Image 1 (cartoon, rainbow, N blue to C red):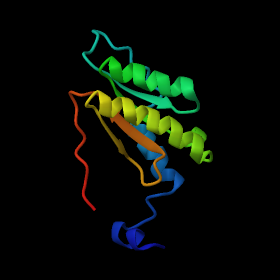
Image 2: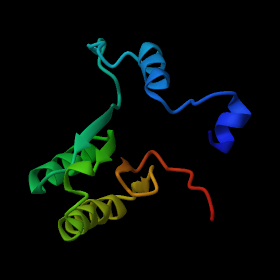
Image 3: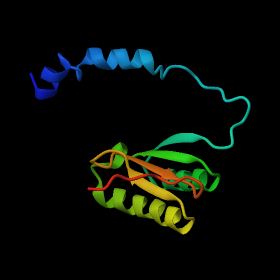
Image 4: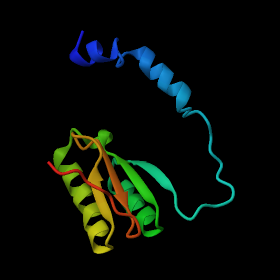
Length: 121
């Protein structure tokens, strides 16, 4: 039993906790957006150059993109190249970029109208 388990009174990281979370966040629901929104939050799995281009295209359209890097996390050089390409576009267009997870598995990118509040170390 870990320290957090002692504080919370149980093991909150087990499969039961995930199942309960699935009930709250029903990922199986299909969201058909009507009427059209001014901007969207989209998730892109970064695997190749085409996915990086898709992120850039969506940012140019004014959308917020969550970039899932887990498909290429074991290829650090490729990950660095694609991330630098996305970052260059973001900076050139006065957008913002930040890692949402410590291992950089999930990165958020925003268009110029949206800024990310980053915590200081």
